[in-house]
Length: 250
Image: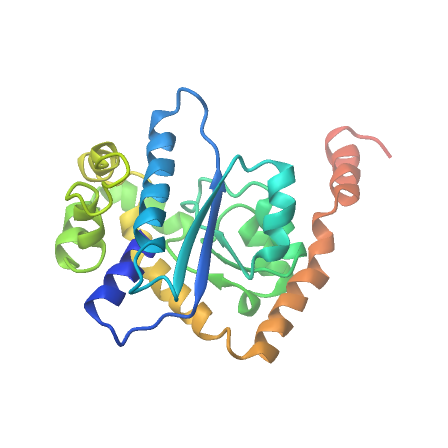
């Protein structure tokens, strides 16, 4: 959605030139995980449109690398300037990739979730870019039952609203059709994972972070803070803590 919104903005406003960015997305789906396959299909469809549109492809490119295995990851980690770790707060879906990206000097753009919390504490919040709802805010929202995705979509018809409509209006259907399953999951299921709720905060955080890239002294300082503090995630420390705290070995 963020990439789609950048694309839409560039078409609407030819004076808008985002920082030149290649969005590298990688992953895989279990054989029966049809929704994940739909998301991968959407990524590739968005890439097909953007990468073949001469109006924008000098500024943004999208690459999907199939099968996020170690052999692929070891090439992606050192290539990344920004590590996007955008799981919904409380879901802890970040895994260990954010740690490996940190070790290679990438600045984390993410929610306050999973290892992102430790990364921000270790390297300093000022050396990462955190956005979105916090766990306590999400829990309170669910308890109140007052979140309605349609309210957000209707309030922002040219932003997230437009991205939602593009799932079914043919904009990205050129490769293999529309994306009704994703649309229904978001709008029919009231955006359970709060993708729409966090969207505006996410886009703003990305724009602020990429805008700071030209100040290379500041950027490299932040990158070095990440590298220097990444040793906390070593397997030696982890195994030692398991031995002491869980297995009771000294």
